[in-house]
Image (tube, rainbow, N blue to C red; front, side, top):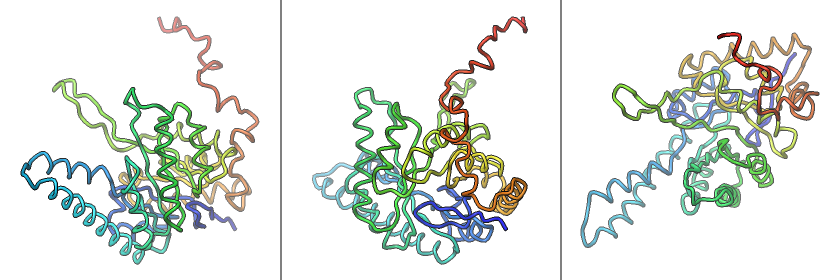
Length: 332
């Protein structure tokens, strides 16, 4: 009898298929649907610090008066209070609707007072907290050290305030990614998710205007997290979840072989709905039975950097063996 049990978020999960934070996890009804279809855990739609900041700035730009500063202080408080109250209500309703762990997601672009919200999330009943942290490294005056300190300070602020498990979801936008992940793993976190997927710009060449690219990932995007899961999983002192571009049971198995404890998926559910989960779970079980594995622990990490027998594949940046001698003359 195969077992798909694994551990992430500091919790034992029935299986490694986690519903990532997205608009689909913003309602108790959808949460119930994912739970009934066999999700291992569900990360609620993030509460975004940026949304609060944008609303505050919008009002600040439209009003002027002698007492406006006092109004803005009050308005800032009211926005935060309303957003946090609504999110606390969602957590409570989601817990009632779900048989699997409910994880709150805090998406923040600054540290400080905002991170105090973690205590309210804990009080609302979240089983764990995922810190969704990101600073776009586009300011030439901002150093890598300063960016790293933002992440570390945010993690310390939250883990120092709450007792529930805390995990961190980060991007790949680091010049010293392995060192940053190692530093984060040295804090009191219970997992690291690789990687965030962000809104990307595109260009409409007919209208000559900027547009937003599709928010959904493509299947080939799983290769970036696959590389880094394989490199980091044997080196970090915390579990890793893979995220971005995972659309099939086969890709889930690849991540587990590379060393992931779990995967987070969202785009797949926009395309196929929660009903694809039972099929994925069956396909993973069938693969395990075919390969004589009784548990995920039997094969997790077998193809990581230190166990694959061919670590150069993870470290290689250029296609030396395949295209090293290719000149293009064959197609002239």
